[in-house]
Image (cartoon, rainbow, N blue to C red; front, side, top):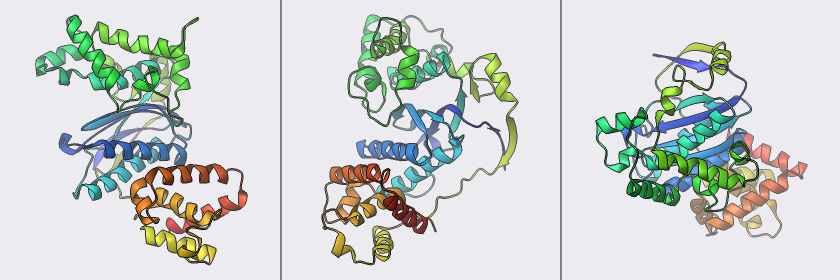
Length: 345
C-alpha cells in the first residue's frame, strides 16, 4: 500500500500528466494519437470535463482540463484505462501501458492557468530533443541557461509551429480550432487591449521560445500538488486529505462486443439488425453506432467495418448527428438510457 495526498475540492482546473510504464511508448503512430483524442472528447461529454490544452509526446502526454463536477480522478482514469485496453489489443501486448497513477496539479485561474498552458504547449520543444546532456538539462530547468542563438530559436519555433499533436497550432491561428476544445478561457486571459486574442497568445508563447525554453514551472508547485499564489495554496491546503490507496488500479468494466450491442438494440426494437440496418430514418442503426463508441472500445473504422462497411467518417458524422438529435427528442434519450443501462450491467 502507498500513501497519497488527494485534494478534496468541488471542482477546479488541472494540469494532468501521465507517462508510459518504464518510460515506454504511449503513441506509436498517428492512429494511436487520434484515438486518444477521441477518448478525450468522449470524456469531455461523459464526465463534463473542459479541455483547454493538450500535447501528446511519444511516451507521455500533458492535458489542461477543468472539472466543474470535481471528478478529475474518474475522468482521467477512464481515459487512461480505455486507451490502455485499446492500445494493448491493437498492438497485441499485455500488461500495464501507463506507469504510476497520472499526476494532476491543481492550477489557480488567471495568469497561473495561462502559464500552465504555455508549459503544456512548449513540451514539443523540450530540451531533451535539442541534444543537451543531463547537466545542461538541469541548468535549463532552473532557468539559468544561456540565451539561445538565432539558429536555436529558429529551430525551436519551427518545431513548435509544425508539431501536429498539440493544441498550440489552433491557439496560434495556424489551423482551425476544434469545437471540443474550450479555447475561450485561455484566449480571454491572453488578450490585450486593441489586439486579436490569437495573436496575443501566439506572441506570449513564441516570445518564451525566443528567450529560452523555461521549464521552471514545475518548481513553482506547492507540495507537488498546487500551482498558484500563496493565498490560493493556503485555501486549498485546508481541503487536503491523506488517504491510503493501493498501487494497482481497478480495471474498467468489460467492453461490449459489436454483436452484444446489436442484440441489446434488437430486443428493445423487437426487430432484427438486418431489418433496420439500412432503413432510412430509423434510429436503430445510429443507436448501435453510438453505443459501440461508448461501450465497445472500438475505433470509428472498426465500427464502420462491422456496420456493413461504413466509412469511418460516416460513422463519426452519424454519431454526432444522433447525439444532437437526442437533445430535443425525449423518446430517443430514454432509448439511449435503456441501452446504456444494459451495456453497463
